[in-house]
Length: 328
Image (cartoon, rainbow, N blue to C red):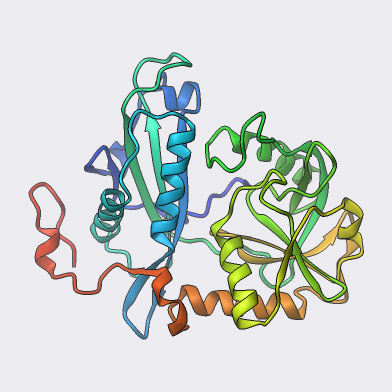
């Protein structure tokens, strides 16, 4: 939302409708439904390069693809891609691009065809991958404002559907924040409770408790949030309380951080110019961030089932399919 996306470089190939297409040739018509009416749902997925293993691990790939399915059903797409099929296409795309570094994937289901708002024809699968540009706030933390823009709700643009039109809502908040001199924003629900940032969910440490807004507080049902709740319980011995959070609780929090596939665990240093706690990042934020990084990089044996290896047991011949670029 800052003007620079997480993809820091172009991929060689983008997969479009089952075909690997050179990056510059991956196009849709300007009047297609995905452009005119934002008929697109998507997932952002991270891959982490483990140099010791010489392996690229995609984090919670199947869970992301299951959420993609849920978004397609809710948006009433005629086509709902099977998880097994999309997983194969994701691996095919990453291998064709020969990634051996941290990456970010965008897996999109788009409706093309005639530009009418009610048109729901067969969907196309689009997969983009590229090196990841790290966020700049991991050390010092973000300065955020509570936005005057409300978060969309389940009766407007349901936030649990990861659809492109929802991000216009967050863009309003982010533009306002940046023009007011902040790094990002926290958005509230229609009833004044904390929802999330434009692109990430929020955690608070207050009076010894770790708290996060519930899934009915107009948030995306974040897989990173789900991951942290489990890590807090199993690695830090802390139960996360899921409940509604008031705006003024943010002002008296000991620690705040945002989390998401792109943002990982990003500390929040101040809210509306009021410092958060005594230091940013705080001790709990640092602990959970380390536990998260150990899991995604494959350094924690307990969480290996969250990882999909890209290169393991992948002979060179697997990439030599008809019409598919050879990979190393």
